[in-house]
Image 1 (cartoon, rainbow, N blue to C red):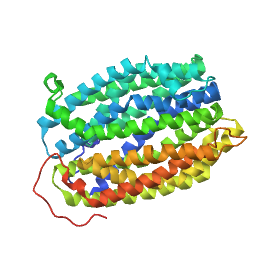
Image 2: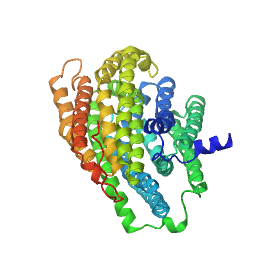
Image 3: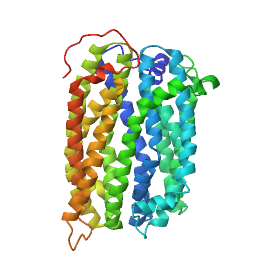
Image 4: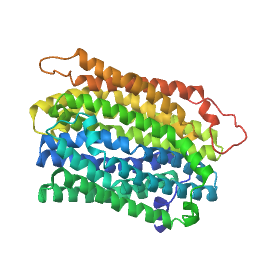
Length: 471
């Protein structure tokens, strides 16, 4: 019994055993964990929408693109670290593995201070950039400032939980998230409904929960002395490792920045349509967050799997694992589409009782629903390439589909759908443009994956191995 518990909370070597079993045993706790993490923001929205009102819910929605934009550096560090951890763990290079993790922790600390120093003084300017409605401006400012003060906790939790997953341990981060999510719910109800702290209380509940998560994950990493060495020497920045980490992570960081910038422009368009449209869009995107979870989870799982097996020079396992995860991901995406089409109204009603917003939200969910199949394909093909160390293609595909396609298309569709009911354009324009970008992104990711250049991007050079054709 004790041995099974140790296996559950320890690292997972995905270079041995059946690829399907590896991927499922890693993905299931990761999926539950991602679900729990999504609950952070969703519980905030549900409780605020129910106890404070539609304007407060709109205020939270307004801050999200701004917050994501400020946190893009975390994405860069986390992505680069994940690739390095998976490959060096697969190659059994404990020294470089430990130094990579230590350097990542130092970079997160520095970037957290940078985000707070830049973001907090510029809060008002950033909200004006997105045309935040005057009715919700003060509420949005309150929420965003508190969230930014907690940047350090978010950064440390994300990097340490990412390291644990790169080592093949998805169960411990899951347990931490479940605990923190429960704490977040309790604090949300207490601060917002009990103490009448409004959106500030929702932000504070999230930050306290993130702090608990960060402390628990850091503690776990420090205790893993049989796998890694976290000490003062490994925290000192190493130019070569930092350069390697950033070269792997910056494409993802740039991609995230592009997504965030495009989201800021789209949020400005949404805000121009009025706070009721923002409220509806906020609810829809919270639901979208849950619908996306399996896609992101399977993308992370195959990335770790590919990283470990490329590090161990087992390309035959990379090929089989890629086929297996593709079947799982597409099946799950189809089930999600069916559920969204069947239960869209019930889902929107969790956030608001305003009939106008409910009707509009149902239509928006139905517009997006089929697009989740395209996202599933993008995440799997992109995850395979990221795990191999080929992180540039995703960046260029994102630039093309968001900057070159999604944002101009959203504004164009809004312009051509202006009416007396919607002077700034139909809100459908926002979601049709997103759907088209998803589908195009899936096509481009597949084409680049088929070229096969990602097979040659490993950090650890081996003699070439000839394997069969991937599916």
